[in-house]
Image (cartoon, rainbow, N blue to C red; front, side):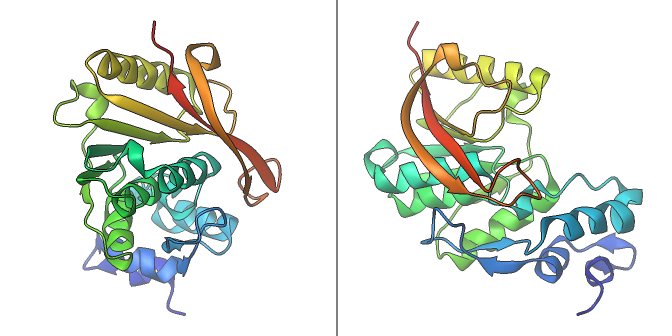
Length: 228
């Protein structure tokens, strides 16, 4: 196979789509077999490849190349409970691969915007949505910096892994909910998930890789925000 980094370069500019295709395969997440995504076969080689070969351009870790446990749980819940998104305008925050947003469209959402600040994730979302024959609008904007407008539902998969980020995300979600926007969080028990402010509504055993997690099965839950 052509070198993945070289395949993604054109005249010194990274071709995001070429890089994604060169370093992933179309695979179904274990808990969500209805959806196919461009995912890394082996997590560590891709992680090292991006750091070693593309580090000079400041490429962030390729979170978009893996179906994280919290996202899988949330996507499964949305597909099994389509009434939560059916006919609604949905935001998939920090979307990564686009898994949750694609699940929302398959469950009958009126529209989905999948937001991620990583340009590679934005392209992965576009590729994955097209392969699954759904329309998802991908954006690279940092939506946490502005009030949420134009959405009925927010879906957040596996975003509470860093303390300051978790605080910003929860405050933003809580403010949105106070204005009538529904929110669901998928999480495998990350350290900074504010469990005391949430209500567990579903739980799943999610198969994952030990290269990314501390176990082959992560018990992951879907949470809603408690009304204060």
